[in-house]
Length: 182
Image 1 (cartoon, rainbow, N blue to C red):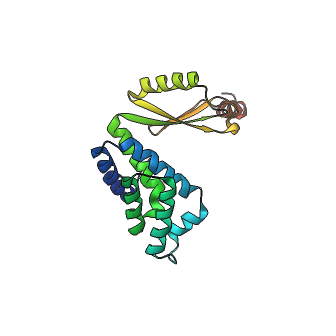
Image 2: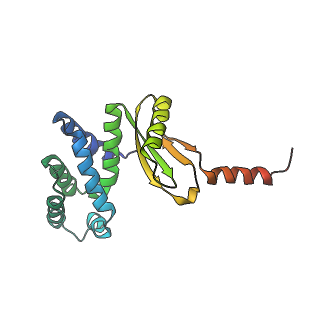
């Protein structure tokens, strides 16, 4: 994922601090929770964008949210900083950049796998092994369920898409049947 300069700078700063304190995995999980709460709330997204809210109002609301999420002081201070600097609307992008950098630092790569139903652990392990051989890196699978693919698997890894879905195969067959015979 391409990240903006803002996301890169903030994510580099918090990753460096988290790495120094050997808490980069924990901070990553906490940032995920914060970003998920913002993604799931129209009101919180409006708070981060609407100029009618003062910085003090934003900080008070975000502070209460962070108390309820029970995050570490590093995460709390970081989210409060981006709130104060008016960068809260970039939280999802900052968190994605954080994970990209943490993964690169650890020799990992994320693979987004779209399936009709969640993969069994054995299937996920086999897919992970194949992808690790292809990429030469440790692979973290992120599964998404999408019944519209009918069957098979669509995998996005390292900027590449491997579409082994039944839907794609049917589309390919349909295209070949429509084209004039050569």
